[in-house]
Image (cartoon, rainbow, N blue to C red; front, side, top):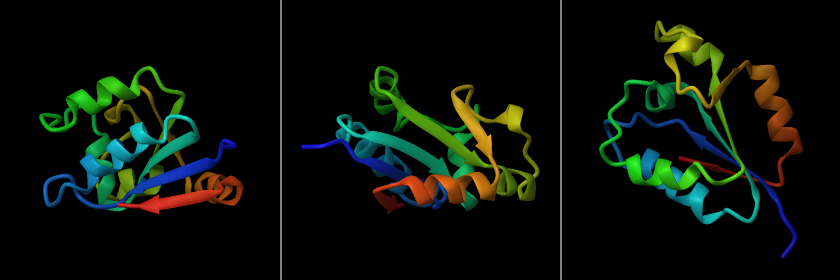
Length: 112
């Protein structure tokens, strides 16, 4: 099967549903594709360095060996009073124009 470029958007708050956890599980399951996780809107709470990872530590461990790109929406961070240095060290903070470019180059996208 040819590799696809897949975007996984995490837009839901981590403390109100399991969507964040399921999004990361899907990312691991798509290991043979080019996968990017983009935290947007209320999803940025999941990308903070000191977020509760009690449910996702194991999944994050599995992500470490994969060629996975992590992005955080800059505007959503600012709206919630956070700075780029508040997010996970492997995540890149991007603006909406950069997110639009990622979307334009993707073969598929999933929203959680």
